[in-house]
Length: 552
Image (cartoon, rainbow, N blue to C red; front, side, top):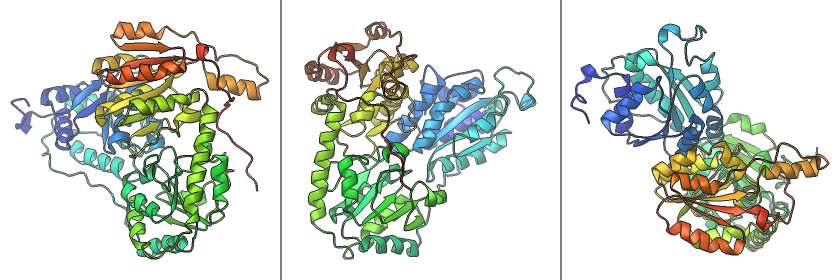
């Protein structure tokens, strides 16, 4: 700390922010430096409590902050400039909002004298608040140094309260420089949803009437693994969304993994007499566009009141927090539920069949899952949107913990690498990142960030020299007319050489295990490029998420 840290008479808003985040033990932040955020970043440097990870673009920085939030479950910090800088981050912030990642976005603003006048001041954006409000939980503008001590704790509490998500605090450059003598005393107060006893009893009654119950659990259940395991130990089957992976150890006998829409899983649903859906958006790509046949009796629990009427009809609904409900439910059900023991047999058989189907769908490249699993033990599994992720990466490689798997929930490509960087910065574990050549070119500048941070990230780069899934959609739905999918693909080995990164290309899947073993042993980042043109196409054409018409 500098000599004047205890002299509030010289402290500006940037100083206050740096010291407040330090007091909250937030030791990392991500972003890009600019003339309109320099007072904040200068304070980070002088006070030395929060390390700033400099990305090569604001989109990458936002994905990094998102990855960090997902792997810790706590607050992450993004710092951008105003106007174009904040706009560059918008897509990645939308992804963070989709994933309900708790993030604090600190963005600059032009001098207060010119804000909202649309005079063309450099970095000015028309209605920046409107943009930010549309991609997060909350937005605040700090209009004076006196306001920061009230606004920042309020914004952080909003980000951390369930359902979590990114919040935006916009600070004009003159306000960042203005004096702020407020003490660092106000705690962050999260809003905790209370669970009414009558609501709990509704859920208990629903499950107690079931002989063959299933839980469908989403990302909102991540903090509740102990309670979910207790429910599974009672003989209740558990299926999770891709966002909810690891809510239960996927090696548990009652876990169906994230095989939500496999044909054999759907058959099992029809033999069950009740499904409790908790903390899940019930997304289209995991329900055959809402036409997946779920058990006839369904009960839904969600913090969003609007979820009562989303996508399916429900026999019951309560507005509640999964963190409050699931532990209380596990306790209340003791001695009140008797599950048909045959359900465990069917869950095991269904899971085995679903895994087999997944291996077939992703063949021959699904074999990579076994090679990754045999070379990496305690690792974070990050996936970009690729053919391999859609066919096998979202489901194979069992996860035993809820914060060790992430992907772009909104379906945008090019977010895997920066998410992996954020996960590695915050997670303290090796990261394996599955990405494609097209997606990597969207964020290729962040390879320099990866090299600079020297993080233990192995990139498994699936190179089919273009947008493979779009080609398949053209084949399946546009009479095979191609166009706009064949990309000029760079020699990624030269990128690696220029950045001093370890690189290896494999043209045969039998070489994968040795290549991954060498990458795992390397202390820094590695690229293992899979030459799909040499190995050959997928055995089955994957042309986007499967869907069917929903019956009336």
